[in-house]
Every structure is written in structure tokens, then in C-alpha cells.
Amino acid sequence: MTAVQAQRRRKSPASAPNRIWDAGPLTKVVLAFALVLSAFPIYYMFIMATRTNDEAIDTPPPLLPGGHLGENIQRLLSTEDAYFATGLINSAIVATTVTVSVVLISTLAGFAFAKLKFRGSKILLGLILVTMMVPLQQMGVVPLYEMMVTLGWTGQIQAVILPFLVNGFGVFMMTQYTTQAVPDELVEAARVDGASTMRIYANVVLPAVRPGMAVLALLTFMQNWNEFMWPLIVLNPDNPVVQTSIAALNQAHGTDYVMLFTGTAASVLPLFIVFVAFGRQIVGGLMEGAVKA
Amino acid sequence: MTLNVDAPAPARRPGPRRPSGHRSAGRGGSGFARFDLRATPYFLVSPYFLLFAIFGVFPLGYTLWVSLYDWELAGDKSFIGLDNYIALITDGSFWNAVVNTLGIFVISTIPQLILALVISNALNKRIRGRLFFRLGILLPLVTSVVAVAVVFTQLYGRDYGMINWFLGLFGVDAIEWQNQSWSAWLAISTMIDWRWTGYNAIILLAAMQTIPKDLYEAASLDGASPRRQFWQITVPMLRPTLVFVVFISTIGGLTLFTEPVMFEGNPTMAGGATGQYQTVAMFIVKEAFRDFDMGYASAAAWLLFALILIGTLINYSFTRRIGGKK
Image (spheres, chains in turn purple, brown):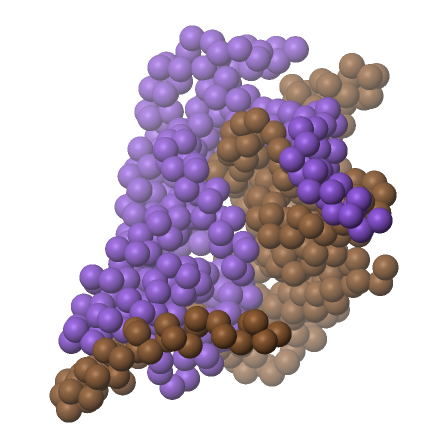
């Protein structure tokens, strides 16, 4: 009996059609369906950006690109009350600044938590985990707003930048990543050679955690490019970020579908370019982070 | 047993250790090195805690303080103790916002988790073009919430929306999606699900790939069908990740803001004519920045936090039980 079982077991993974692991027709249908559902609204958005308003309300709706993209973009940029170009530039500044800060601060703290021994490190890391549960955005709006009023910064983009300079998730992620990516022996060896802690950070840790940094940078950039609630509260309509600029378009030109869609298409395009260029790393990083968390 | 004892491991161990022990004796004397070893870790973690204290802890405490006052923007303030909280608990519009938030949370999260499980299970099979499928599933995450809301709001339009057009093919009359709670909740839930299902599927897929394959091989030798294996091996083994996913969804769902605001078109924070889709986050912003009642808004913010704590605890105890009893 046991011999037969052993033989069977050895055979099954190797034999060509494997009932459990190979994708059957049902699996393919599920994936194809999910893919179409994922892609369709995005496709629709880009299609609408190339159409006119008359075409946009046709029934059945147009499903192929038209020839009005250039004209729509011109109209979008010349719309007074949306300040779309300003919004794009502001968003780029905000998202870039915040990303640099979050990545720098997270790699520093992540290195300390992952590889250095110091009193209270466990408690401090636990504290960061707890703070990840607090919806600071919603809970802090009133005091943050008063803070910006006091500083005279309402309506200016530093009001949008400052509250996001640190991120508990970033520290947590870099702690996990550094633990895995940097062998203890490497840190010890550098120490033995007389390297200071900051030197170890610069010469040993930073090169090793670069892939993790890239994923964190992409996620942080996306998140801040998408920020909506706080900019809506603290910025003025004439100096928006791209998301609030779209909201203004929506409010003033709700029936001008085509311009609204051109704006949203332009607002997601930078993220798409990043996604196409680094998609593999993003998926890999998300999956790696998920398993360790 | 005896065979295992003579392992080569102990022989290897002194190798890397010797130099470190040897040199550290010499290093101990230097004052800078000792200072560096003790103090630098605190310097490294201090930027986070410093900035978090200013933009995190301080606002939280200040919100609690403001919530005890009748506090109008740039106006008078007077201490009123717990009156804001008492008023909130009896405020129908606050409870309306709570019910909307919970309603949207429930009808978005449950299908989302089921779909994410089905998709991740499909992604876990051997199939050509795996990366392509994974990227495709994740694509919605890369769009902005505002963009999603704009596109879906148009799709749900009464007269020219594609969804009503599609339903019309089956003889369904045009629905005014914004007008009733159930339809508005449904429309907003689809926006949330569309953006987040793929992300959750990827997270669950990562966890699925850590499940040892011999579990499945043993089960199929015992004649368990793939479906049975899914429910009795995959789902129970995913429990920690499901807890994580539900945890993230709870916080995201209970702080819902952008989708309903954009669905409304005009950001008045009212959530429709009768507040049929006003969420708690919208309620807070409306009280603070439309009605300028900072104290009331702050009390609502703390109640939101309480809601999140309760929601997380309920979901935690619920998720822990998944696949646990059978």
C-alpha cells in the first residue's frame, strides 16, 4: 500500500495535466471577466476625452476613439475657474516633496528598528503600528486647519505638504524590508571595520534596500497625487491640486462631460506611465509586503 | 537521532564570530563609537516621531479639547463639557451619516472580499501571461479616487448614463441613482469595489502562495474536490491575511469621503437632498467648514474614531472565526 501511494505521490506533480494547479476554462473566464471590468472604465474615460459632447451622449455610447483630443485639451487648459495647469504643477510638487521626505525618514527609522539595538525600540515600533489605525485625516482637520490659519499658510501648497511628511506605513514597511534585505553579519562586519552608524546606513543599508525604497516611493507618490479631502479644505480654488481642480470642473461644468473626462484622463496619465514602467516592481513589492505583514 | 547530532553546524559557528569578538575589544575604548552605538538609533527614529507629534498627536489632543467647547471659527468659545457629545447622540442627521457609512461599508466590503478571493484563487493557477493578468487586475488602484468617481458618476447618469442604457435593453426604466439611499449606496459601493478588489486579490494571492502545496496534494489524494480544498485549506490558511484586509477595508470604509462628495457634484457635503449618502467624514467637514461649528465637528471626529475601534473589534472577532470552526 505505502509503496503504491509513494509512487502515486511522486508521479502527480510531474504528470502534465494537473487538475488543481492548471487553469481550467472557468478560471480563464473569471480572469478575462475581471480584466474587462478593470479596464473598461479607464478605456471609457480615455475614449470620452477624444469625443465631443454631442457624441458623448449618443446611444449606444461611443466605444472607439474620436478625433477631438487636441481641441479638448486646449479647452481644458483655457478654462478659467479650474486652473488645471496650476493644479498639475502643484500636485507634482506636493507628491514629489512628500515622497522624498517619506522615503528618507522611513529608511532611517526602518534601519534603526530593523538592525540596531536600543532601549524602547519595541515599544516605539508598536506605537507606530497603533497610530496606523487612527484616521488622522478626518480626526485632525479642525486643529490642522487652525494651525495653517495661525501660520498664514491656508491657500498655499506647504499646507498640503506638511501634514504628510511622515507616514507610519512607510516606517513599518521599511522596517520589514530592511530586516529581510540586510544580513546582520554585514552590519556587524562594517562595525568591526570601524564604520559609524551613519556610514553603515549610507554604504551598507541604502544600497541593499533600494528595491523596497522604490516601491514605497511609488505608493507614496500615488497616494499623495490622489489626495483630495485635505486640499479641498485648505486650498483656495485659484491655487488647487489636480484632484480639487477636477472637482471644480465638475461643479462648474458638470454637463461638459468631455472636458471633465479630458481632465480626469490627464490626471491619471502620469500614474499610468509610472505603472507601465514599474508595474512588475509594484506587484512584486505589494506581494512581498503582504506576506511579511 | 544519533545521526543528526554530529551536524557540521557547531564547527561552522566559530568562523564568523572570531573576528568580531577579537576586534570589538579594541573598539570599546573609543568614546565616539560608544556614543554612536547608544545615541544614533534615537536620532534615526526621531524625525518620524517629531513630525508625528506635531501633525498627529497634537491634532488628536487638540480635537479632544475643542470638542468640549462651543467653538466657532475665529469666534467666541465657551466651555460646555460633554454637551457636544450629548447633542450628537440625539442628532438625527449624525445617525443618518453613521447609517449611510455603515451601509455603504457593508454592501461594498462583502462582495469585494468574495470577489477578491475568487480572483486571487484564479490568479494562483498555472496560466500563461500571469504578470499581465496581475497588472490588469491592479490597474484600477492606479487611477485616482476622484477620477473613478467622475467616470462612475457619468456611467450612473440618469439620461445618458451607460448603466441605465444597458438596463434599458432589458426593459428596466431609467433609475435616478442619486435619489434614493439604496441606489446611491449601491453606486458608491461599486466605485469602492472597482478600485480595491484587485488590490485585495493581489494581497490574498501573495498569502496563498505561501500555503504549502503538499497540503493540497494530500487532500486530493484523499479525494477532496477543488472546491472543498478551497474552503477547507485555502480559506482557513488565509485567515491572518483576511484579518489584515478587513482591517484596512474597515478604516477605509468608515472614513469614506471622496466618492460620495464627487457623486454629489457640488461639494456641499450634504450628500444629496435628504442626506441619503452623506457619510460621517462629510458630516465632520460640513459641521466644521460649512457651518463653522468646530466643537461639534471635533466631537463627531472622536465618535468616528470610536466607531472605527468598534468596527475593527467586531470584524476582528468575526474574521478570526472564518474557517475556524470546521
